[in-house]
Length: 304
Image (cartoon, rainbow, N blue to C red):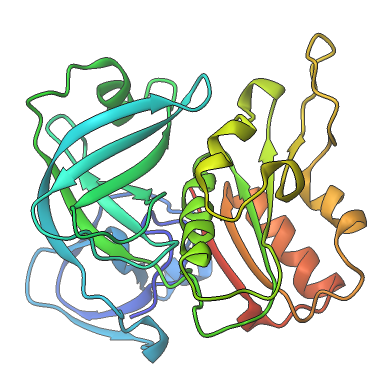
């Protein structure tokens, strides 16, 4: 069954309720139009059946998982600040961490109001290590716990992996990664996944949309990515520059910057996008409508 955001925002998992009772976890979700609601259309990701139900849904073999999601319990190993409000959390679970570069997990913990979707920033490993880059949400119940509480005794739940916006290991096309905010995590995972492949014809490029100079992740973070030179392959773009900052790089919205800086012919490039919906949608529209990039060369997740 199609899905993307798991937060009621994208509308990928629409279905029609034929019979039975269902309650929604979110009122007036972004992923439903008024016309959908009049027709009895619902979103599976925020629906809870209260009885036996009959539904009609559009299925798609693309969404059959290569790795079947499983639930496991994990403990915190470390939490490291990357910026003032973006930290990388490392958890360890029993058994191997099995996922594809670019996928995400649904993470739960005592005090969370339901699971939260966080993308992994590392790659699959036998040690059971799951790394997530999480952005503090002002007033957020989950991030208040993650950033401010003692987590030494906390048992985390990890339900993973999810997403079809993962690295296409069969493609030998050049790769461009575009991220905003905590959308950096799956891009780092994809860059690490690329470094683990036998050979690549061209080095990948990472564009990072930051709101202010304080939101830029230090290039030094990327020095541990095998074969990745942050001086040449990492380019932050700041949308709200600060006159008091030493930032001398490009400014403006990232889709506007890419409109002038990307190669004229992008049709034979694989693009991976992750970040806030307005950023992802603007970049996606530019690539598809203006640059004529084939849809199957675009892989994206929107972070709500």
